[in-house]
Image (cartoon, rainbow, N blue to C red; front, top):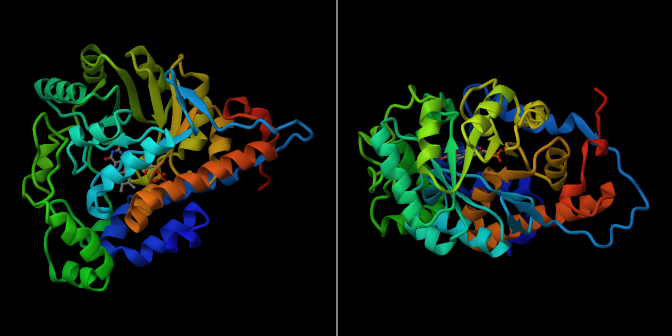
Length: 383
Ligand code: FNR
């Protein structure tokens, strides 16, 4: 019933701010340092306006989009988000179920708290995102596990060479390892619906573990050495991507590209696709907005599929990204808020809102399918 008041993806953030304890909401909504990249991700969409065409029969509109040879119902998917199962009860499975039912991709996070095998059993079409371990033997072991679980698409996130500075987490008391404190207990008490419905219910299954950072089960979220689970990553380079390409038989996507030269390198190293992304403003503060980087990357993509995430909240945002050269987009935070607020029904509702916006705006722009929209549909907004 509460979902009826959610009319847009932005409404989800407003509702989640009231529903989630401050540290949890801060973890999801937050960004690195000043939040400049987070704001830039959104502002970049306002820099473009539509130039609609009229009297083009748009009665046979479809939102269907083909990607890597598969037909999806919508041109957007769910971005990987770590620790989702602590934000929403059964969070990873809820996102997977909703994506499966909507026939759209969902990317399982490498720092998720649900076994990848269980998520793949729920939605065999899900993709898996890996935080590449530092040592070659551990890379191979992880890839073997991902392949054995049945995933066909591997997403390698490359914008995490060192861990980011997210001051919000320190201010609100959110950390990995999660440290119990009076402050956390107080925040939980004033948000009893989340505390009982998500936190305590989750604990009935035991202490959550990082289930997918290793070839085997990783560390519990409260362990002192939990970050060791992910290993040192600052030495990772293109030879590691080459190693992954040799070992991974499926579709390979590199996530976190912002420079056209890196797009070319990814193509040269055998990637099938890239996601232009600044990690939702959560890594390098001041990193360029993906939408601003998109055009030049799309021109030098060397044949790889170009996708984008960051700041997509409206069907019109989806269409602007497609017009500037993306073939597909991903959405993060709003779907996690939807999972926290309303479980699978909540995510179904959020997907439907975005789908209807895409469908409506295709018609208003004057095209019949996502693939038809081109740069001609846009003009720079006056400043
Ligand atoms: C993320 N993101 C992310 N990316 C990734 O590759 N692996 C991960 O484990 C995570 N974890 C994660 C947790 C949370 C709570 C958020 C909000 C984000 C980044 C994510 O995949 C995506 O790039 C951005 O969230 C997209 O921006 P929007 O749609 O949230 O603005």
